[in-house]
Image (cartoon, rainbow, N blue to C red):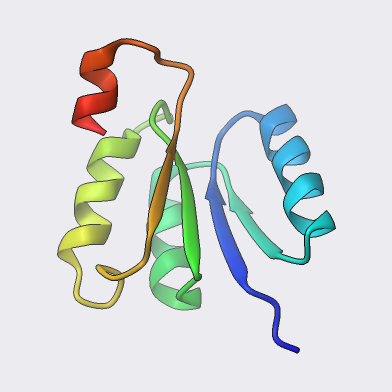
Length: 95
């Protein structure tokens, strides 16, 4: 059986560790990177089944990464879950 792959784009090591443990325990293969450019490169190369994307990243933020992924025909159909500590309604709407 082929494992589904999840790309985790998150810069907080503790969050990467916790999410990776949980996702692998439920049978997923986790690819983790800590910045936006690496995430874009990995998404294009590995074509994951799902991307979990932090909004607040160093350099390029998660919203910009999301726009690039969704405007690229190679990655546009990949579902994205936005992950953030922001709780304002406006942040949720933008995401």
